[in-house]
Amino acid sequence: MFEQTYIVAEAGANHNGELTKAIELIHAAKESGADAIKFQYFSLNELFAPEYYRKTLGLPDNSWEKTIKKLSFKDEWNKRLYEVAKKIGITYFSTPFSLKAVEKLNPYVPFFKIASSDITNLALIEKIGNTGKGAFISTGASTINEIDRAVETLKKHKLPFICVMHCIMLYPAASEFLNLGFIKTLSERYRLPVGFSDHTLGMDAALLAVALGAKAIEKHFTLDKNLKGADHKNSLNPKEFNQFTREIRDAEISINGYKRIISKNEEKERIYARRSIYANTDINKGDKISLNNIILLRPNIGIGAENINKIIGKKAKRNISKGELLNYDMIE
Image 1 (cartoon, one colour):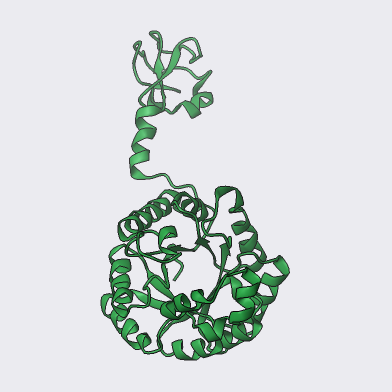
Image 2 (cartoon, rainbow, N blue to C red):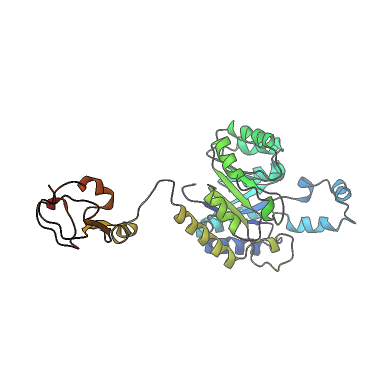
């Protein structure tokens, strides 16, 4: 699964409460080159304590509840979205925000996503672990101890995979807060696939994450950045997401592993750009080869410059004309 960077189009609640938009998002994600599309499965009563939430955030009234109800994922969408995604060849999965959501999703998703906000929700993590399916887990605003505990909870279940997603819980996240070097720390600490949940407005951070070893990239995705809703303006539209996936694939090709590879094209440059040993003067039979009668010039089609010490001090077997390419048959 992680042979190449796994690219997730994070649709979240950008369906705006409309099944038709959710279906459009799936098609657009596929056409944009994503490997998977992810939604968020929440409802007002299973995610919020409304009065406490309103007071804690200092909200003036309860009008926000109407928005949450509109954006809530509908249980009956699951089968339809799964079928659409399967038909066109893109993976459909989701972030459940309740135990009930895990149960509703389980028949239709191959794996789950655990949001940064639920990294301390051990009941939810256990529920996901008990499904026996793989899990992505985001780490935004989390301490090492919190990440340790969540990862260990999942590891107990011997899941097909656990992908730890480096994440900054800011929308959008500015460069100075990205802490991308932490990707390597997570990889070394857990010896698991590590990804990056990208909340920046651009594409550069994801490319840097890939260069640092990220095996999965998640990026917010919308049909139209001008639609109403908090996430749309922080998302990539289909045209931008298509460019995003192409740049990630180009970055992968550029990185191309950690072994030194010399391509066939580069092999040619070894001939044109490197040097062989040529006669800098006429050399008579029996003369010793020295730095005074040879010169190192392009192209490298004879005795390479690296072998100069093998012929210095040896005698010429025959007369060698100035400018002639030396080879071992000319030397005793």
